[in-house]
Length: 224
Image 1: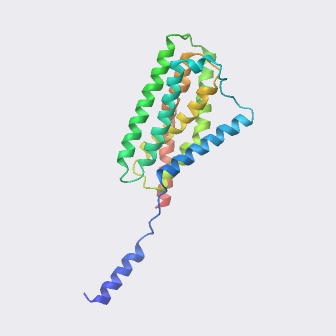
Image 2: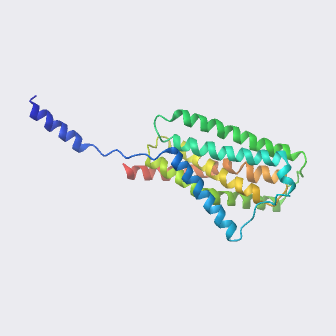
Image 3: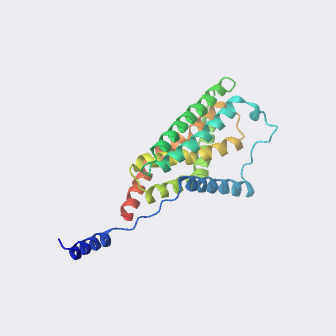
């Protein structure tokens, strides 16, 4: 093959290649997801939404209450980090670390709720169920934007497992919302806090992952 024909072949190959898109740093995307969440929470407070419990509230000295809050924070950080890392080849260590943190957070949040049952009322009626649905819906509303932002990054980067990424993004985003709800909800029922707060991220992921994953697949096909 002559040098001129080789150069022509190389030009043809280069012409057929699509430009490589720069992937934003994971820290920047995670920070953006947190910033969006904080803006939504702040806007809700300014518009007269539920305010955090006062500093003198006995809940702030309850180990079980604080354990649930700390666990939800770990779930949020770990799951969102893992969701973002799952879409970037070579970030498997970050994915594994995020999964471990999220798993430990789930255990901590649930353990805090179970520990609180020792001092709480186990009764559960129709009004309690309605309150649980309200808190779960509020947690979803607060964290949905962060979840969708993470999903947008997953589609933009190199989505490999849409269901896995969507589940992690939902779990992390709703955990952020549940943490905010946990600090503002006036209910002192340990059973309510366990079901409506600690378990909210898992319930949201179980119910909403299939439709969200289907949406991610459709958006990815449009990108290709």
